[in-house]
Amino acid sequence: MILLISDLHLHEQRPDITRAFFRFLQETAVGAEALYILGDFFEVWVGDDAMTGFHHEVASALRQLTATGCKVYLMHGNRDFLLGREFCRLAGCELLRDPALLTCNGENILLMHGDSLCTDDRDYQRMKRILRNPLSLFILRHLPLKTRQKLAGSLRAQSRSRTRMKASEITDVNPGAVLQAMRSHSVRTLIHGHTHRPAVHELPEGQRIVLGDWDSHGWYLQLENGQLALESFAL
Image 1 (cartoon, rainbow, N blue to C red):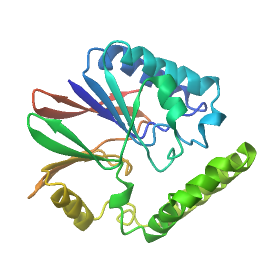
Image 2 (image 1 turned 30 degrees about the vertical axis):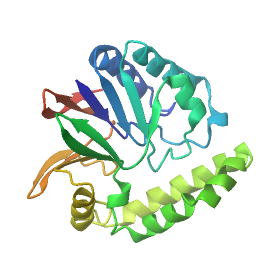
Image 3 (image 1 turned 90 degrees about the vertical axis):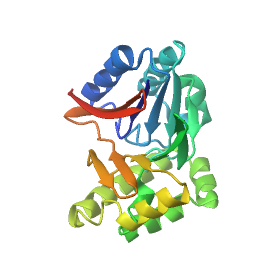
Image 4 (image 1 turned 90 degrees about the horizontal axis):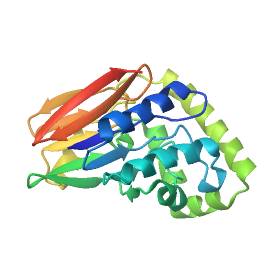
């Protein structure tokens, strides 16, 4: 059994989500072959040097899962792209490139966070190109911690304000971008998060499965015996 989740947006102000995640690890993920976390695991991540007791508790919970033999893979999202090697070392997990391929029963499945598919949101894509530039990443990682925290707060506030003003179709994936991604990787199944619109979309090229964000409900995708099932549960 393989499990996939995304967009938990863990932070100390939502202990209900953290408790639900810990229950998920203890009751659902135990015995799984692998757990894939496809981005935005944390609400914000300004650097591994900013870890608090809360972050260490999350890392410890993941480490306990990996001790059972379950492999954990973590992909960057748009909120936690500065998450680095130190957290992964503590959590016993492996950073995963975006996009990545998961092979199941001889067939490849494309895994993405999903933000790169929202090509109609040009303001966001422009900002992403700036922030993810290697030079920008180097500068960000070497800024004083308080400066990074202040910058992260400002960027989050701007993002919330701009998102409220945008039409929903702008912040959703572009069908052409989906088709291009699937064709370029020769897959019939694409799994992603980011948009907070959980669903299974049947396409002429195959299927696109959108993982849900954890808010009033938790969401996960279960892959077992070649079958995919999108599940939810109340927090």
